[in-house]
Amino acid sequence: MRYKRTINCSTGNFFLFGPRGTGKSTWLRETYPGALLIDLLREDIKTRLEANPERLAELVDGSTKTRTVIVDEVQRVSSLLPVVHRLIERDGNSRQ
Image 1 (cartoon, rainbow, N blue to C red):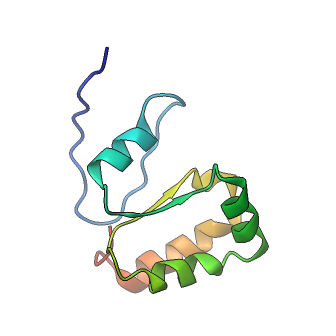
Image 2: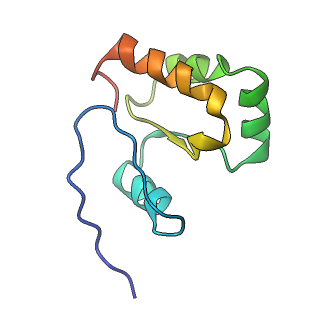
């Protein structure tokens, strides 16, 4: 059985927290289908960003298709958090 998720989204930047297996990633993919998705469960992406966290900024800046960026499972690469923080500060609420 599927339950409808009712979350009032921020119009700006936000972190989505919750227990494992509750559908956060699924909800994000359904809610933001055109977003630039950086999925850190993919080992190839995780390894590249661990080696060079600044690559995240390059990916975001190089994305012309969307203003919405999802970094899924960001806790797997904690060295990305300062980059995320800097991007949020730089862009304010111009990106979701």
